[in-house]
Every structure is written in structure tokens, then in C-alpha cells.
Amino acid sequence: MLEATDLCCERGDRTLFAGIDFAVAPGSLLRVAGANGTGKTSLLRILCGLLQPTAGEVRWRGRDIRKAREEYLRDLVYVGHLNGVKDELTVSENVKIAQAVSGRKVDDAVVRRSLDAVGIAHVEHTMARFLSQGQRRRIALARLFATPDAPLWVLDEPFTALDTLGVAALSQLISSHVGHGNTVVFVTHQDVAIEVARLQHVDLGARTSVAESTC
Image (cartoon, rainbow, N blue to C red; front, top):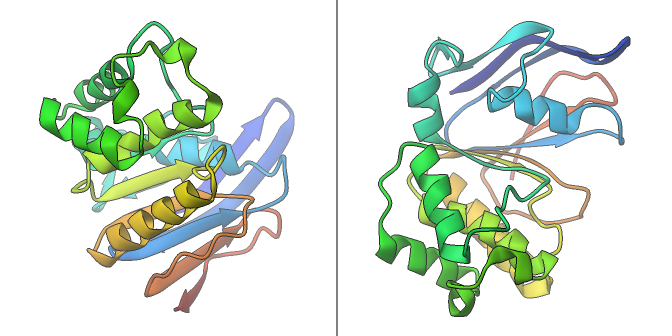
């Protein structure tokens, strides 16, 4: 279970959000909403341990993520609003290094299958700097296909730069991942329907607690 307790985030002299509490059980999809500037990306970065909250705590399986960092990173796949793609590396090298940094085994066959799943296996040896924004986004999303057993995905605007078929494929992947008992937290401005049994919401703009619905 992913839990947040009394989270607060301040940037400079401005409080983006405060008093955020939620608990997300396995097999759930949590959508983070809010207008621009309410701290959605900051919240996701806090959940990933990339940004320290001004106050509060994030726990994974009952432990503070700051005290169980290595274990947490092995369980987590984060795809940020920025793709995190290295221009000087090839497409396949980008996926491999992401796996290695997270402490996962780098398997060439798995990497190729993940690139094939997102439709860019044909450019696996191409340097990333020569690719379009849509193709670079697919490199980032290939990490999801390469780690289908990761119990937690955190996704910031995952549908950006994808065409209609790409959006449909990713929606199905997220639905399947949650359906297998995993947890997904995401932000999107797009109206994308994802079929899951348990859907939760955090609205930072309204400063509300988590609302839950069953789909």
C-alpha cells in the first residue's frame, strides 16, 4: 500500500498544497487532479522520493520511503512529464540504463520486446537525439512494458505526444496492470477512459481528501 500522511509542499514563499492524506491499496488507480500550479508534478516527485516534502511522510508497505529507498526504487517505475531520455544514448541503451539505475536485471530480450510493444523497435540502435517527441515519449513508456511486475507505477502526463493508437494501447496497459493487483498513480489533462475496478482521486486545487469510486 502507498500512503501519504499530512503532506505539505512549499516552493519559495508559496504553499502549493498542505494536509494531503491518502492510502492507495493494491489494485487501485489514483488520479491526481488540479489546475496548473497546484503542485501535481511536485506531489508525484515527492511520492517517488525525488523531492522532499516540507512536512509529512510517504510510506510504502508501511515503511517511510526514505528509510527503504533501495527496496522502494525496485518496486517503482516513474515516467515523468519530461521523458528522462539521454540524447547521447541509443533507444535501447536508454531503456537498459533506466533498468540498471533502478536495480533491475537488464535483459536484452525484454528490452527489445518493450520497444516492439511501443512501436519503436525498428529504431532501437538510433541515437535518441534524432527522434521525434512522440518517439522519445515512447522510449520513456517502454520502461512500463519492460517492468510489468513492478507493483507501483507513477506517471506524469503519460499520454502526451501519443497518437490515438498509442493512447489506446497505454490505457489498456494501465488497466491491465491495475487489474493484476498493482497500483498506478497518474496525472493527465486529457480525457482518457481507463477501466479499473478501484479508482481514487486527489484534487489538489480543491484541497480535498481522497474520493473513491468503484467502476
